[in-house]
Length: 299
Image (cartoon, rainbow, N blue to C red; front, side, top):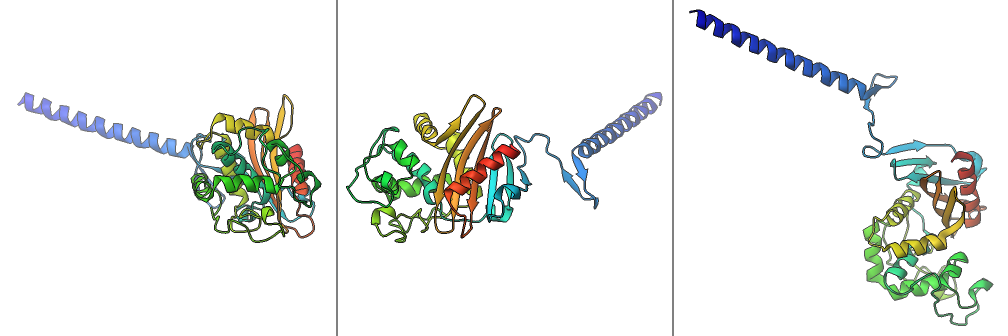
């Protein structure tokens, strides 16, 4: 009889212990959840980020209007380390436009990776034509052609790369709508070799997609070789010292202008895309000046 009573007491103690342990676990879980949630003014709860690098994207609307000074446009800055976006005119950052000459970054990538050009000194065949920009009327190296944004030079590269290879690359890196159906362009210019699908034609991309593509390319998320990336950085470098480096490419279309690239400051890299949709002020030069003003003031 004593053995039976002892056994009953032992079972009761075990059940009691398990119940207390479960309660403790529930309390610990509630405490953990409380530490990782925050309520807003309406009492709604939202999970906090415990690690900004590995969890949810940070997306912050910012006011850069003082740098735009009345010019209609948008700007996005992206830090890949913290997956952080800073957006001015957020809706416009999601709107697609022709990439214009910013596409020369991708054309260069395609040319280098497919053996059409080999380094920053590679030249293409000048045909002797009289182009509206005097600096285009001669043989040019890749560096020179990139700096003066020579359309015929990059038109030759993309034609030699070909449609199939180009299409595959654009799909792989998620370049806007990836539409190269108007391969020869929309006759924006009177000279055929000054037109292409990237010049106010079938291919369009948003500012947000621009920074995402740049991050893929320069963070080694494509199959491009380190040599190719190094050459791209050389020709995109605008200014730099031991503390800050600034890389970019302008683009100008019909009431549509860009400046895209990245800068490094205090060991942090930010990718950016500034787009102007303004009848009177949409030039690549203005987009670049606005970008520089934003960086100087806010970064």
